[in-house]
Length: 403
Image (cartoon, rainbow, N blue to C red; front, side, top):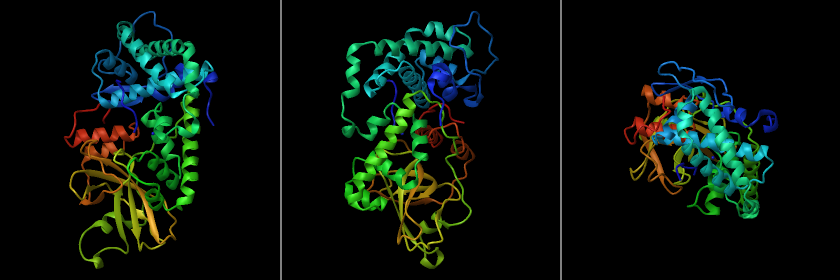
């Protein structure tokens, strides 16, 4: 497959149409020297009669993505962004045509659509940039409808019983931005449970202890979390383009106990009250809400605060994370306080911290201007932020779309 996957009151498609749905989510801004600018108007789905010259050095983002696809030159973030565009158009078409949804249908239609776009490259790249998205959507609609017309596809929806569907199955057809939106919309404890649904190296007893729920309640809570993802996934199948307003990865709070001060080595008298232990959640997670902090003896009127980015390292020295935000899972009155940490691996996606790996403070502050620019870019998903950080720290090639 060309595309990598995540390993996470609305208008209906009948009112918007496929082209409008995709345009609202994926309409590209101006791309100039690698930066993404303001959104451009949604293109028409009709082929243009004549080419309109583009301003030098400026093209809509979707046009740039299609050009790179046709040139076989897509970078990692660009592949994910284009997957989001194709996936949304596929799901919108299925919903608009009242098709029976299944992950297999979406996956096959996405691959068929990709093949159709590559076949149609000569027409797409010679069209005016502002019309290329409309041409691409037409190809995606046609490929999806052809796939839906195959009789054997009607059995795909029943291929797996709902109880056997995993979180990864449910999120397979969602873009990285949609996964971020789902997770950020959950309360912190439910968010932690959702993240542990992806973890393959922990036992139910460990999950219950990490999140602070009785073991006997874990199955019920997991089922509720999975149902929430299923409901979110169904909304997206309708082609709904509405996502919560993006927020920067880096967040600030004014009051609380500094996590960096708690982690600093030295005399206990020089540190605030409390002690904290930080671990991973799953070796499959390397961006966004990916670490867990367990604090004891923290005053009930204090939370854990991160007032500026800092670097954590695994105790074996194999992995470093840039931590930017904390969200409490527990209640302030609990004797053991639990927090999710939003953090990004800065040295690639290999050897990530798992639940049994502990981390310590490696650098108390990061104020590199380009790093801060990446963290505050609301146009990037968590995975895209991580890839941009890998590039910034010299661990990977430019993934595209970085500020």
